Amino acid sequence: MESEFLKKDKLLLIKITEEIDHHSTEKIRRMVDNEITRYMPRKVLFDFGKVSFMDSAGIGMIIGRYKTANMLGGTVEMTNVKPSIKKIFEMSGVLKIIPVVKSA
Amino acid sequence: MKGLYENEMKLEFLSKSNNEAFARITVAAFAAQLDPTIEELADIKTAISEAVTNSIIHGYENMEGKIKIVAKIFDNTIEVEVSDSGKGIENVEMARKPLYTSKPNLERSGMGFTIMESFMDEVYIESVLGLGTKVTMKKVIEKQAEFDKDKQLEVVGANSI
Image (tube, rainbow over all chains, first blue to last red; front, side):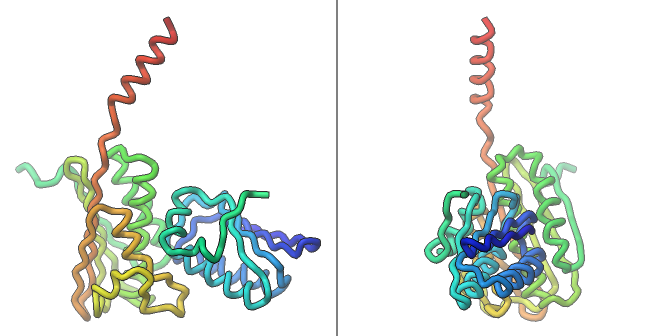
C-alpha cells in the first residue's frame, strides 16, 4: 500500500498494491485509519489499479474507512476499479455511498 | 478401475489467514486444466476465498484448526468441497442471506455466501453444530469456442495470401 497526502486539496490518495482478502485487510485498515486521523482529509481516494484480487473482505474494508473518514468530515471515492472488483462492490450496494470516479 | 472423476486433488492446511491466498491460488491452478476464461478463474478464486475465510473466522473463530479442500473434475465441471471441523452454523438459512453477518464488529459484510452463490453454479451447505461445516460448490466451465480459434486462423490465413 502506498499513500500520499495532497495538502492543497486536502486529498488523501491510497494506492492499494496487494490482493484484498481477510488476511490483508487487517493491515490495510490499520494503515489507512492512521493516515485519515493524521491528515483529516476532505476526500480519500482509493486507487484499485494495482489490485489483482479482491473478495468480500474489501466491502467491509472500504465501508469501515468510509465511516472513519466521514466521522472526521471527509468523503471516500474509488478509482481504477476493474470489472471483477466492481462486480463485488455492486452486489453489496457500496457504490451508492462510495462512488467510482475516473482517475485524475 | 475407472473412477467417477477425471481428476481429483486434496488439500489440508491450518486455519491461518495467510492460507487464504494459498488455497484460492491452488484451486485455481487445478481448475486451469478446464481452460477457463480469466473471469471464470476469478470467480472460482473469489468463491474459494469466501469459503476458506468463513471457516477461519466463523468455524474456528480464529483458533487453530484444519481446513480441507477436495476438488474434482468431471467433464467440464469443477466441484470443490471446503470443510472444517469448527463450531458449525446455527442457522444456515440465515447465514445465506445477503448482508447477514454474525460478526458485524469485524467489518464483515455478510456477502460471503451470496458471492459463492452468484459466482458458482451450485452451492450446498452442510453444517452440524459442534462438528463443522462443509460447503460444496460446482461450476461448469463452458467450452471455449474452438470455432473462434479456427475462425481466427482462417482470418490469419486469408491475410497472408
